[in-house]
Amino acid sequence: MALTQGSRQAITLKGSTLLVTEFFRFAVNTILFQREVYPSDDFVMVKKYGQTLLVTEDPALENYLKRILSQVEKWLLSGSVTQLVLAIISKDTRTPLERWVFDIHLVEPPADSDAPPPPKPESEIAAEIRAILKQIISMVTYLPVIQEPTVFNILAYTKDSAEVPANEWVDTDPLAIEASKSQQVKMRSFSTDVHRIEAMVAYRYEQ
Image (cartoon, rainbow, N blue to C red):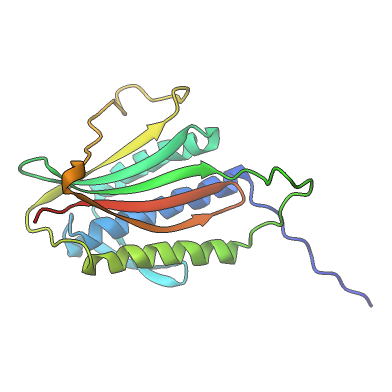
């Protein structure tokens, strides 16, 4: 009997959006834990992407992230969000200390090809996400030690056509770090059949 391997289906916009939103949830939790924005006791271990990660149990933080990511999911579906930034700032002086930047691109098919590229295996996507999260964890040994209380803010950069819920998102300071005092590290990226996420971190560096 002749057997053929079943063809993989390309990830849909909705499926890709769920993958990207879930990645942001784990990335934000990992950064907040590793940079000690919240006490380590507020986090619990979970298994995801074939590794152990930490997520918050703080109800207020959980609800805040859920609201943020719910809106990000809608913007991803409409293709109207281009960048997310997690900014860590000094609690006392409001000075920006770090900006974790995630650029969001739509994957364009090759212009010189009539046939669509083969669907990307979810195992490959998970491996790329795992590599980014491991890199975030390893950055702790590289980034300057933060020796003061901090808070964070999440910024979303959207297209002019984006629908923005009233009273929930407002135009705000970009919380940029002065160029003369900023160092940047480009990080790994990951992609689905629909989205490509490129990451970098900028941090304050004063000699």
